[in-house]
Length: 585
Ligand code: SER
Image (cartoon, rainbow, N blue to C red; front, top):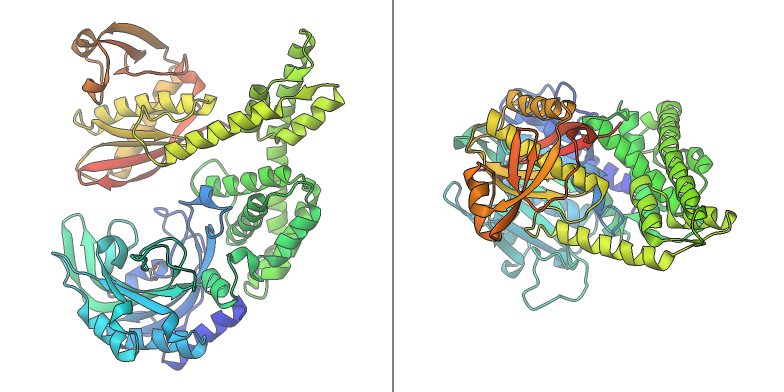
């Protein structure tokens, strides 16, 4: 069954059950600068979940365009997507658990024809704020799910809230058994071995959470969400969403055009192109901040992977057409916006090509250096730097090199690349270290910015805002610190401004070795004193920051670019987490 048929069946089914079909809200939330993109069907409906009357009544259904960007770097595997469509139905103080579950079961088994034996469900196990959801479990039994396929989990799995504050409640989730063998005798829906795939989430929203805790809402709501790409994939018996008709034409075209064969790159191009098209069609434009920055990253990452596949960038226009043609039945607005979409993507491509051209200049410099030696080989480190900093595929370096009569050490490049991957992997496993998993110009800059952020938080938030952890990649920094409240917009702005002021001031970064006790006496910051040997290195930045640290750092803060906080969230109780970036251009 094609995605569009699933969507139509869904909307018709809920229409038959008294729901009004409402249009998808735009991907870029109206009047809500606090979120980047619409991430769930309930997001545009929050006022109505809180009690405002919806003009279309108390039963609603829609398809919602969604973008979730936390996992951009995971795209390329067999399941992550940044853009997806969520089918949803809502009760605004109308029906509750019994009717909601019965309708879901009927839709899955009768309309989509999924055998009941393939379904398992999960319910909320209960905690101090909300009792165990035996009501839902009883309804599941009544409709035909045997007890052994009903699981109870805690807040991590069976509680839903968008962010940290707002309407929320226990949920019941439906899982599809793919028929793959169980990974162990304990394999169950919460396991991510791939046997069970979550297909639908019904949230029973009767609570409201704010910083003081949970209160009951004036009305009991239902909010459900079903991921369309995933359902299409399962019903079509495919292993990945990229094998469905949603991506097939573009995947095939990429395969036909490519000169190098990388499945991950084809997926990244197909996925990021679709996402970019949908965002631009809803008014998004590339820029250096917020939404625009996400869009820029999507487009540039796609271009890097087109390069990796060795597909001529002149093909981009055709690739956009293929996507628009493939998706316009589902999203008729794409046809009207085809021109704009093309202009925006091609313009961004040109800008990025310029950046890449700078890479070529770097390449020329390396050649000049080589000409002064007797070597005819470009070392792997240079190939890697061109790849890592300028997005220059090693194959391109090799080709250019051979035009100049040089060889490249691809073997050494591969080793460095593997090492780099391993380090990023360790980084993403969040092992506690100095926070610096890999050393590139970017990560070194982020490291210095981390010290500035640490110092700025002490001035703006309070001297107890001690560092509790940090993690750095070449694309962003993450910093955890003690703090008992969500930072206000004013606080965030003040922290940003202070860090940027210090960057502008061009402060020298200096390094000194001294006895640990002297370092502490001099007021140097340090997270875990026991971790350090008797003689320590202290890094000072002007007179604004002094920390025990292994380095490395930039030599002057004027090398950092513009500091920007992109996220501030809770990390765990009493600890806040900031994600920030340094913008170069
Ligand atoms: N809001 C819930 C989700 O996003 C159900 O729609 O999963």
